[in-house]
Image (cartoon, rainbow, N blue to C red):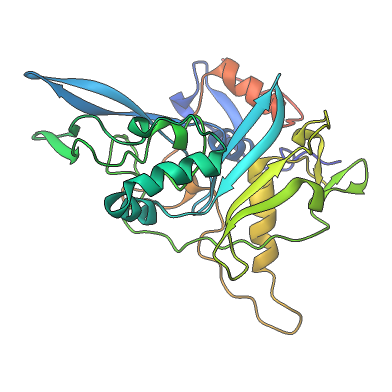
Length: 302
């Protein structure tokens, strides 16, 4: 089986990895970025001072994001969401109690505290002129832990700042996925598509809002043991690309229609120009690449 990290051109990732510099293939960078949360900060006012509030954002696939769950180091489930940030901001303004119940239902956690989904105080972002209010006390927090480090309920987006590098201001078209019933994921040559993929939310017309990928109950293998139809080892990014590629292929006799967002989110052109993703330090990068099935470790240069 060919590794997804082979036959790709190489890119030096500057100081986004700990020194000395590391050379990574574009494919490896895509996988690393997709599994690395960007850390930014907003500010809370305390008296005359502004105190940093750490916030996270995903950098995965434009219009589609996910959260991985591991047990004893084994990847056992992935929750994939295509739900736009804007819809949740609107819902939070009109029906905040519904937001809490949806979080609990989507993530299967009845213990999610309501106050962890909303800001407890005014929150500011830093500008050239000082500090600007971006979230008032009591407003919905789209960057809450249950939508970043603990789950993926809806698309993160830029969420009004807090990051050195933010997505472009324009909202990309909503990514629509359809779920094939077979021929996508295999284990030991056996088609496991129907056993591991489940749509948990849709728009009623066959398009996916949320997709769950999970090892069946009672089984003890990991999702990383699955193989995609392409022959590549399973990764969340690889699965999303396969799903997008499937809907991009036109029926026989029809011309292909251009898909506007067929790329990882961090590679999409931004208003300030293309920038490299935020990547983890060397030890974490090596560990992630091993988990993702890299054929070789990261190559460092003196």
